[in-house]
Length: 271
Ligand SMILES: [Zn+2]
Image 1 (cartoon, rainbow, N blue to C red):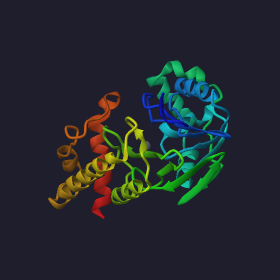
Image 2: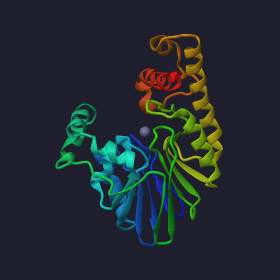
Image 3: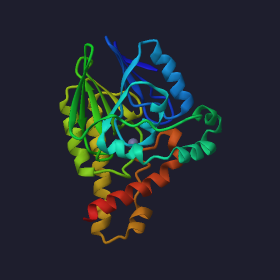
């Protein structure tokens, strides 16, 4: 676990997303949750040292961010689109996946169900807890439903997967042009530290590099479409694994990720 500022903590070493929390004068606010049950329980013990959990803010509609909410108290806040994704998630499928990837986790899933947000937003919301302000802002990009959580008192922003720090971005549900605009808006917040969805805690000077990666993807797939390539030809041709390596924990996914990214951009840019 990393102490980002006096009151903000984040973990970048769990499998899945980077969860974090903020210690306020009236309890703890979590941002995202650990994906793996054993990590969630460790995280819960860590957080308990700082007070009760008041809120859980979920930044996006992917399971590595919201699955762990089962293990915590606290009111869940997320984008309406994230709530729909959680409603569509199957506990049975989760158990089947863990049976393969992490069978030792299964006993921890006794009585598991996905917890739903009871407060949602579509554009933005502000939550005041003790001495802290949480500005939740929809930043479409990695999916249409991304939410940045900015805490002005700490000058920290939790970016969701709109920032992959030094690891390859997933574009399989991306809205690429909106993503570029959202990165400009992220820059304007005035944060000094960013907790990205994946990769190490970083500073806003990484944002231009993230924009370049998205633009490179857009350009490569646009070029393939303009040359008249089919989707399959584009998938066989385009790879950014050399320029933007995949985090070693996800290395095996690299080639499939390239094909997923091409497929999504091909569909979006063809229009
Ligand atoms: Zn994601």
